[in-house]
Length: 98
Image 1: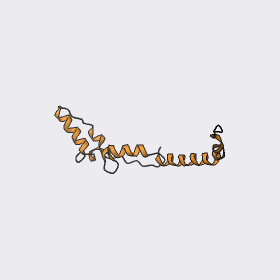
Image 2 (image 1 turned 90 degrees about the vertical axis):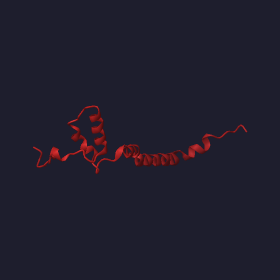
Image 3 (image 1 turned 120 degrees about the vertical axis):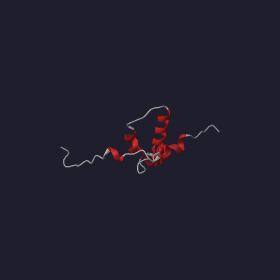
């Protein structure tokens, strides 16, 4: 099974929270209440410097993720309206009561 794909599962001991301020703060907050999270190392991969961009940049990324497609759709829509409905719009809103 797997068709020859060799998946390398990293050893759990290489995940350390040292140097990751978010997890260190979490651990300190838990210790202040007399608690300990033995599974906190499972969250280390989320905060790895190569993949973690922070909450502010993640928010901007999610807002502007489809921005280029929205601009392209807007340009196509406006272009189609100008091309197809240009002649009708010149005579549509004229008043002859003056």
